[in-house]
Image 1 (cartoon, rainbow, N blue to C red):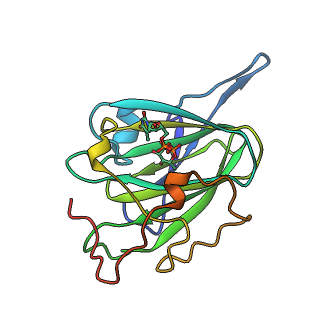
Image 2: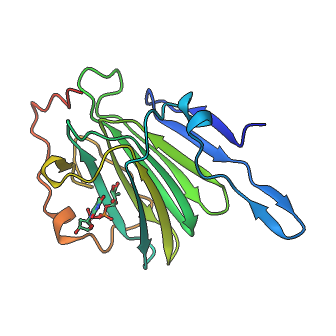
Length: 186
Ligand SMILES: Cc1cn([C@H]2C[C@H](O)[C@@H](COP(=O)(O)OP(=O)(O)O[C@H]3O[C@H](C)C(=O)[C@H](O)[C@H]3O)O2)c(=O)[nH]c1=O
């Protein structure tokens, strides 16, 4: 029996993964990852790194981050505590949804994760204090390949649900996309 319900989104390759906890009188066991089950959803190869973020204040925004080739990465983003409004932006050159974004709520309660394909930027806004996310990365953190899109990028017009708060100095300083930006060649 599959422990995940996989649902496509309007962005090709971006999949919503709903975990299916096995509950009993003691509580529940929830599978967070399965290479075999998630291969069909687009996860290929080993997990290179796992990160955990704790964000203290509601309304905080982190993002919009991605890694360029050769460290372009898939990410599986899960919420372990609290809730986020999670955003993915398609930056893939030639994609039919280039520069379109998709957002959904990830929370400990709804057991929903996003499997984000390479070439997409990721960000989120916390909807509760003390929100914790777990990230599975298919490539190692490679500072020389790190890149980002500004959370207030006019070409995206992301409709953040709350006022943007606690943006890091680094995230506040990301430059805007040039009009001629054609995306990332993967
Ligand atoms: C991403 C990353 C960062 N770092 C170091 C670099 C900095 O010294 C410190 C904080 O990095 P940053 O401000 O980029 O972290 P976040 O803004 O929380 O980025 C996170 O939130 C956004 C929404 C994401 O999608 C990123 O993948 C995710 O890591 O951790 C590491 O050591 N390993 C890593 O994989």
